[in-house]
Amino acid sequence: MRFSPLAIAAMLAVSLTAAPALSAQNPGGGQGRGGGMQARALQGITLTPTQQAQVDTITAAARAMMPARTPGVPMSEADRTAAMNIMMGSVQDVRGILTPDQQKVYDKNLAAMQQQMQQRMQGGGPPATPAAPATPATPATPATPAKP
Image (cartoon, rainbow, N blue to C red):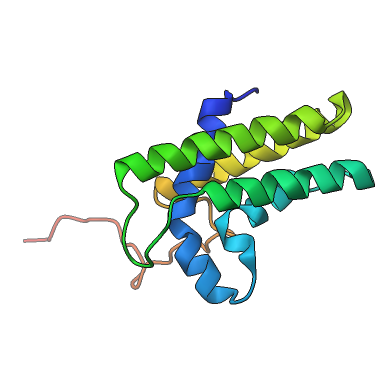
């Protein structure tokens, strides 16, 4: 299944609203503004040193262009649109430096990230472990008519 760059960018931009929480959990790590998402999108891809340098440059540039965020304050529609456009450009720029085989893995990773985001937005994904079947508090007994 192939997702449009707009859909991927929208998923990534929506996830930016979680950036303050992520950076609070990981102080000192600049990954809360998109770098971590790029790393997940590149999971399973071995980049050449040249490709890695290009990805680092693209990620840093995208991070620098992102609208300022105030922790606990939702992004405005204009900022969300700007962030989506920046992320869409970043996704396309990174994809452009990959080989065709790497692009397949990248696209698959992005699709998985989008699916996870959709599951979270719909109230969470499937439980990590199957839930045990509910057991009734009292044994079920067939309804029998009362004898007169």
